[in-house]
Image (cartoon, rainbow, N blue to C red; front, top):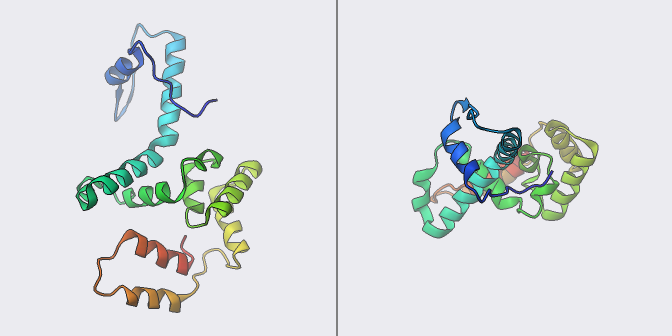
Length: 179
């Protein structure tokens, strides 16, 4: 299965999505043939897999283009996480990932480690929980055990008087083993 969305030149697919897809479900039009329904299914698969990355990419690009004005478009608490994962896991690496959640699990690692762990997760069909446990084990940390409180306190203290940013929180999360 290919990883990109094919745009239908006749516009029928776009018209179908506009008329049969709502936030609450989908109803196929009466004149829809099987091939068309199959293409629509592929669109839904791509959208499902791409939504979190796409929202993170969009918000990151809005931030880069319009500065803090973008923040008025943050609509849920997960938006900052989507931004962080999209920023840390490049589009070139994402196809290695079995899911967005797997990408989230490796987002705090360097690129070489991301490639290694995502490749392993895909090859061994690892759950996100198992992947996170293996990463923490490899780093010498027990899963779920927080580490380096002193470094986290020192880092936090160095930011007193500044606006707390997502990047600051992510650094503290890394120090505490939360990511």
